[in-house]
Length: 280
Image (tube, rainbow, N blue to C red):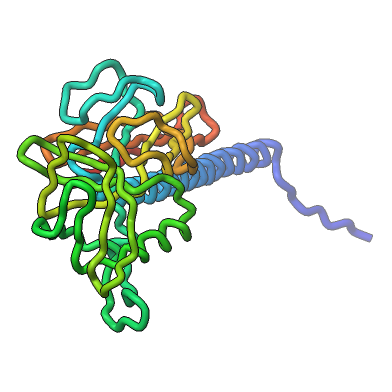
């Protein structure tokens, strides 16, 4: 009985196969690692970009209603208020302004009992002739709607009315009286022996402030006295985390701000995304 002998792999051939497989696997592992690292990097950039853009849009939308002459910046919440158009002192991290009441200005409702005329809460127009040192007449306004919206939003500060005059911006605390005749609202003003009014005005029910805290949180403060440079208080909401840079500057009627956000990717150096916007 004959035994058939079959030739197998030599040791050299086995070693060569193992070496080739090792080279191929190392190349493949490096490619996979690079693809995964690229995915992690792109995901971090995308997430940081989306979050920063959304926060910047919210800020820009609110700053669009800032009353000119009320925008200031501070170094810390308790630092002295400095006009946004001046050269910055120190390293300001707080932007503060008085915002015109856009909710009541855009909203419309029927004014007066049984009225069928749709009017905004405040029209922005002051009738100089019937107005006096104690109150002003604002045709085309449904001031009761202002109080309703203010209550619905949970705002507690007294309204402030702003007039641009030849001597600069003038503001007075106002008490809103719902019109007895459709469209003829009346505002009672705070006492002031040097009061000056103009044909156009803006109504404000809150101040606003943005603070970039040391822990990286960017917070929005609202529902505090709508007067220029007052102490920051009221309520606050978190807009953005991991903020590394928050800068602002003014150029006439234009406000520019820049936000940079860090996104952790598990390495020593995080991804940083910056957004800059100009509000006119």
